[in-house]
Every structure is written in structure tokens, then in C-alpha cells.
Image 1 (tube, rainbow, N blue to C red):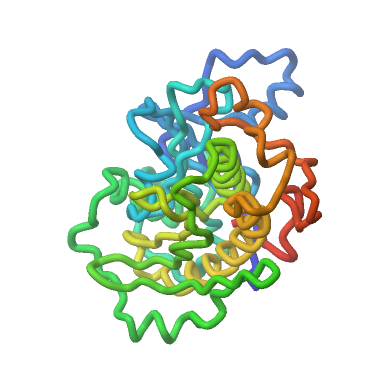
Image 2 (spheres, rainbow, N blue to C red; image 1 turned 180 degrees about the horizontal axis):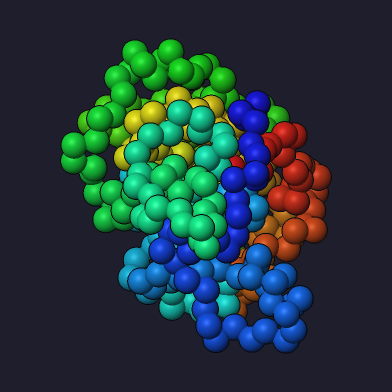
Length: 324
């Protein structure tokens, strides 16, 4: 199970202001009461990045032009960056998103500077230093390259903090073992190959694999889904490289739970879609909103069924906390 997660530290939009983000002045406000409600929901912005909250997690996101395939290029890169579909349906760009875990789940977090001392007429959220430390994590990993000088833990320390034997998911007879990675300055938990992708798999089936990757990583803040560089396997991972050193133990616990839930949720339909010997009138057609171009950056039909009636794409995880 995850450590207890509280939303007590989120005072929005004050926290956003403390972190240097500002509300979009162009957002209309109908009445003062509407303004108050809207201010608790609206993202805040800084240098082209948006910061939003669900009441517990913060999410840093930025729209990025599509130059390659985010489902391949972000796999194996440091930090919790994910490549999400543009919510407006713009196929020419995607959203790079980094979920910042609740500081209440990271009781020993160090680092960060409070940008301004409190004053009598300026209320503080009280948790800015911890959130600043997490925002610095996003900056350290923004380039997608190794993080120089990061004091990553040893393999022995990782073994003490987590149990790699728990990284196992199953869909019928299909069992996948995960692993912990702690080498070359990288710390991650991963299922490197949830399913293999046959070289002759039909385009519609590949479209569904991609669809599932997109949908799964949109449900869990920490977990990144995608393909290996050759496009021969679908994997899932949580990469903690560059995290504040004192956060790594509790983050590993969050990462274990998130990865197991997300991979277990997606695996049954991934297995079906990757197996051309299983007939499915649904999976043999591209996902509904991708049918025109087979460019599958769109939402799945959550009500689909196959002849085998598996745990389908709309099944919920058995347990999760704030959907890490």
C-alpha cells in the first residue's frame, strides 16, 4: 500500500503564487463566488509551463511540438516526465507532464528555498520549500539526459527500501516480472516488456497498443508507458532519477504501488491486442477517434469487449492512492 497521502498542504492558488506561478488573467470571472471557485481549479503559469493540482498532487505540464514519437523517446529518460495527448486534440503537439507527489507522503524531504519571508499581510502555504525541492527535480531532468552530480543511492540501499520480488503482474497465464534499476546514475522500477509486439502485427492492433499506453499513463501520475527503441515491446516504468535524495525511500513505495496498479490494469488488454491469433472485431479496427488516420493519439472506446471477455480497458485497479 502507499504511504498515507494528505491534501492538507495544498492551499491553492496561494501555493502556486508562492512558487512563482501566476493565474491566467484572461480567464473570465462571472461573479465573485464564481471567481473563488474558479481560482481553486485554474492552472497557474510560468515561462510557458502550467502548474495545476487535483488537491493532493501538483502537475507541471507544457505543450511541445511533436518531432518524433513521445511513446518511444521519453522511455528511459530521467524523472517522471510523460508524453500525454493534447487535450484539445491537436495532433501536431503533445503535453510533457510531470506529476509532483504530495509532500505529505514525503515526510523527510529536504532542500528548496522559500522565495519570500512571510509578512503580516501575505499568507504563506507553509510547504513551499518542499515543493520547491520537487520543482527543482523537474528542472534537473527537463533535458532528458543524465543528471550530473546527483547523489543516487546504492543498490544495497535500494534493496533495503523496497522489495523487487513484489514487481509481478499477471493476465491469465501471462506473467511478467519487473525489476529495479540502480546503475549509471539511474534509479527506476520497470516492466521492460509487458508484451512483445510481433513484427507483422496489424496496424489496427498497434494502434490499440498505443492507445492503451496513452490511456494508462493518463490515469497514473508517476507511470510512463511506451515502446522500446525498436518498437518490439511495450513497457512501463517509474523513473526516480534526480529526485531529492531524502525522498527516494518513500518515492519507491509510491512507485511500487503505482507501477503494479497501472501495469496490472493495462496488461489484460495489451496481451489481447498483441496476440493476432485472438479474434476480436473491436481490436481488429483502429480505436474510434483514430480511425481516420491511424495516428492513435486519441481516446479509446472504454466499453469494448472481445470474444474472450477479459478484464478490459475500463476495469479499475484494486487499490491505489490518489492514482500515483
